[in-house]
Image 1 (cartoon, protein in one colour):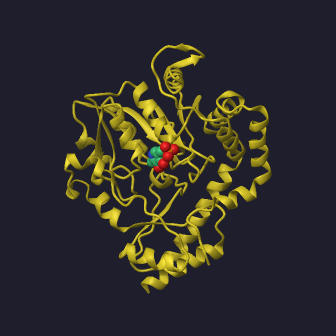
Image 2 (image 1 turned 90 degrees about the horizontal axis):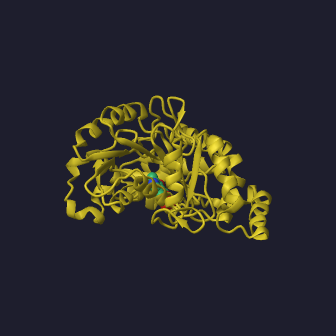
Image 3 (image 1 turned 90 degrees about the vertical axis):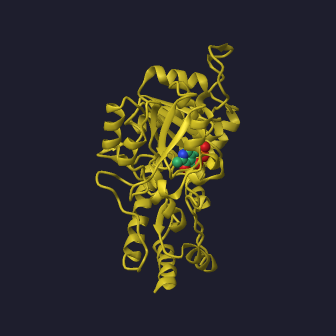
Length: 366
Ligand SMILES: Cc1ncc(COP(=O)(O)O)c(C=O)c1O
């Protein structure tokens, strides 16, 4: 059996009529940049998410950059984030001229709250937790630290659409939050797409302006900005998909539960746990295993595609070579990078597929 890591085609086929109609609608009205489809998606996402403002951007990376800039983060500032994320989280800090300060992860792969406190200096201005793999970070402790130490809180929700902590949606705890709608994300466009959400009217206005060449009204540039707009086709695709997100999340959670059940007693396989008070929307199902590369090759031979998120933790990337980080500074992130493996995960996975993957893993170890 061939099991892809994700199957975007299965989702398209299941909703083809709605998606084709959405795309055709944009072609017929030629609303390619901005206009009605974008406005409609922003309004629908803000409403569904329960926030005042959704400002769409060209991608989730720009969304972080725009927020950081509009919060006044820049040269001389330090921004604390997790050692385990996609490079967007830290490269955007660097793009503003600020310095990313990495801290290690906890046993749930999210930022270790005890390590945050130790990383704070007089230059620390902001904190960016990432809800990695779809699981909410420890937001009670993170909010408490941010408030007590007067730090701006920005949540990177690229992998965690609609996850919650203590019953409250991720993305609603700080000044603003950012989303990616990259095709493989839980809510994915058919190209690059991203958004900022916030309840702060003034911040929303400035982000909208900055992402559109510093103008809210055509030709009235109040500042120099950037060109980071969502295109109409992506907005229409996202609007067509949005009504299905909660069903898809439930399916992802059911797939995860079935993986857990089937892999429970396989020796050495460390399964993803759900932290107290958190929900997990399983953008990724990540296990930690001995001989990860051996298992990966074994699965590939049996037609099972896997991923590694991420093979090198941020501090150890070439981009940060000059900072000479040591494994001992980030022991969990360093250990994890050699042991983590992301199994196939998408809402359309069948029990037969899950059983095939689980049996293939069992055969490698038992
Ligand atoms: C944690 C995280 N942050 C930011 C991003 C950036 O999103 P995008 O690829 O839309 O720029 C991604 C996804 O790629 C991500 O996984």
